[in-house]
Length: 246
Image (cartoon, rainbow, N blue to C red; front, side, top):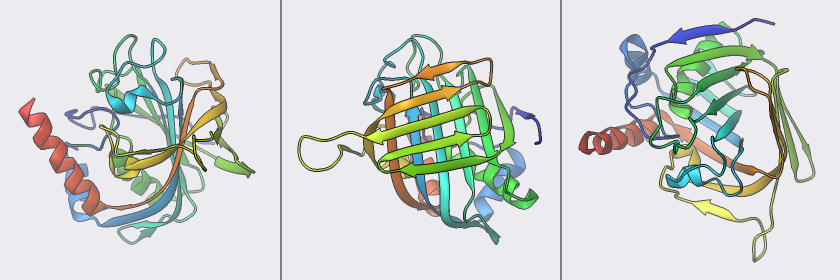
């Protein structure tokens, strides 16, 4: 298994929490603007907050920090001519104590990206580029690992394993009427978070970046989505405009 690869200062951070990259520097920006891509996939997300996560509403986390994970499973998609079907990419992050993810973006304690080890070299580079949009760099440095990323669906329980480092197991909760609660258009929504179903973790663990998370009954969300570069270009331009006014 390949070990950690560190990339520092790869972006100029000018974003709000959890939304897409507004300023990728140098060649990455040029490549992103010229390469068309489209992804259909499923999002698994969990964090240490109590359900539902207040961070998506610009509020303080339920605990001192928000310890969060997002995992994207690509069911169909491409980056340019590079096929990505059947691959996955994940992010683990942590916000500073007593600060919202919104106000502390760019100063998070760590930002680790996990790329499916099944990907070949071209696919790995493509997933890195997509991670800049799906998971905007939130700390001063970003770390990469290449690991197996798997998911088992056991009834309503979704169990995702990220190498030897993390497990995210969660299920949807019942709403007041039929079905699970659905969050639509939260304030910090990006194209993959326009809406999501609300659930609760059975287990969320993480043993990397000097951490030892052991959470249960915390926030869990999942969502099916279809996004492309045009949606993200529009979204990122809108966010850049908003940030310019702040």
